[in-house]
Image (tube, rainbow, N blue to C red; front, side, top):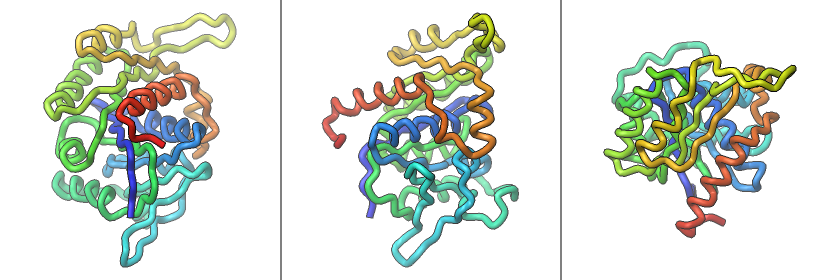
Length: 252
């Protein structure tokens, strides 16, 4: 009961780099372009997608399957926080159970027609990312990082894992890349100089995106209003993904 054309994994080597933010913004950009969008929140132990979209409604089910929750602009979302009674309660499950829950989000949710699905994956290279790569027809991944040397090293692990699974790396997004002073317009590298070009060159990644530190975006996510954010950097990224996938001839 679902027709999903393009699935993009959004991954990171470590937590706290803005992976969920990028997933949400890509879904919003997709909807603004007139395509049907969905977010599968595969970060079972640290779900933040519902908070960013301001969702409080619970997913409902029937004998046919489970229905995702729709955001204000029509993005379909499935997340563990839309199933539990208390979103603040921790999910204390072992790896195989986490991986099984993600597989059920793919198989048991009635997504209907989706042009682009973004899978917000947990950080690292453990059970859940492996399950996603092996069980869901991922067409490519977007890797999210921050400028520090340590993060760059960890990002390479995620990139190498994708290569081992023969999954294309579509884009490399450096979040919190710089802060632009609103008074003088000068850019400041708060977390150090960017290493993204070096990593992209090493692995043959064509698309590089640098997202600035923007307090307005953080505030919008905190208030569940990520759909109010218009990021030209993310719009540019979606246009690039659209071009890549159009070459495969399966978009509307």
